Length: 74
Image (cartoon, rainbow, N blue to C red; front, side, top):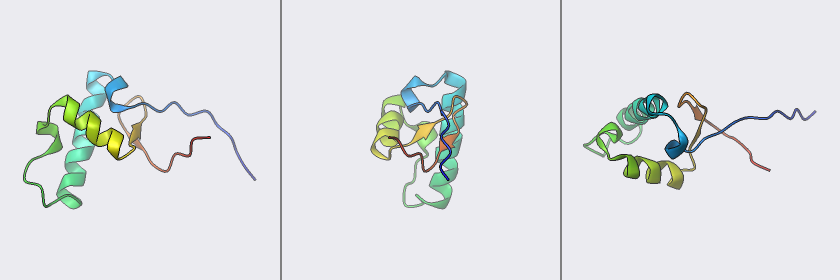
């Protein structure tokens, strides 16, 4: 059975400032657990670098800045 539902997904650059903060927190938490070889935290990066990182990793977010995982786009 297939259930279709409309989901609004946003790129980092399209989020509000408050939502971008949530993305930065999420990226920092990921850095601690997965990206430990880096000494800086994504929240310290310029917005342009965060945006490029999100694009290159194909991260999409809900309007609150929560990452949407495993989104299949048709």
